[in-house]
Image 1: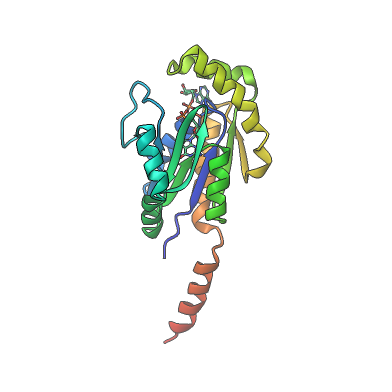
Image 2 (image 1 turned 30 degrees about the vertical axis):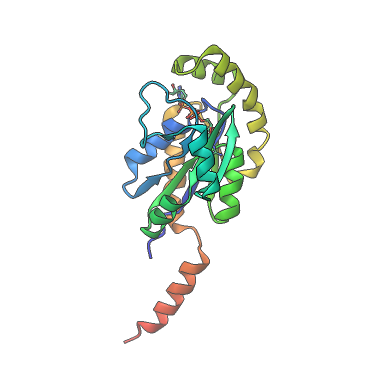
Amino acid sequence: MKNGGILILSGPSGSGKSTLCKYLQENIPDIYFSISTTTRAPREGEKNGKHYYFVSQVEFFNDIKENKFLEWAEVHGNHYGTSLGPIQEALALGKLVVFDVDVQGHRGIKNYYAGACSVFIATKNKQVLKDRLSSRQTDSEETIQLRLMHAYNEMKHIKEFDYLIINDDITTAKEAILCIAKSLPYKQDPDNSARLCKEWLENLS
Ligand code: ADP
Ligand code: 5GP
């Protein structure tokens, strides 16, 4: 069976996760980007069902009650959750499944899928992050300050990740993430190797 793999991207808000996810979506044919559910208000240009499923607090907590989430967390004062159903379907089709979640989400997904590969996306310093959040022009000054305050708390988790990309030059960062994503189908998986050994013996003519 084809194995696309699981790739988790985390890092401070503004470090470039969405930009790199978009690049992967444009360059890997069999990819499924996990669309999270959130209580955050949509930013200009964000579409329901494409970037997120935007829901009310009540709807979000109903989804928790109905056990729809593989993991969920409160991040920067809003709630975000990853639905399990669509991920299982995409994995069964052999797709590469990509997540853009915070460090709590990373832990939750790794607990569930131990073989998942994780990449921390950082900027080289706080000033660069501040400049990027400001130039993105999607958040108020108050929201930017809140995101900057949380950034260092996220940085403290870098060592829990398999890879670190310091997103300085965007071309280099894109090359790095594509390289990691393309290597995932070749990662050892106990189920696949057992199946290969079984089929390998059976196909003797
Ligand atoms: P995140 O999804 O992590 O919050 P984004 O992908 O939205 O971050 O990136 C934040 C802003 O920084 C966006 O305006 C994006 O175009 C810009 N950006 C991303 N990577 C770089 C880079 N290497 N150099 C300059 N600007 C970048
Ligand atoms: P933003 O509001 O900038 O889109 O996202 C804010 C933070 O929430 C980012 O760190 C992003 O990775 C994280 N996030 C997005 N979706 C999820 C999710 O489903 N679960 C968790 N734990 N974090 C998420």
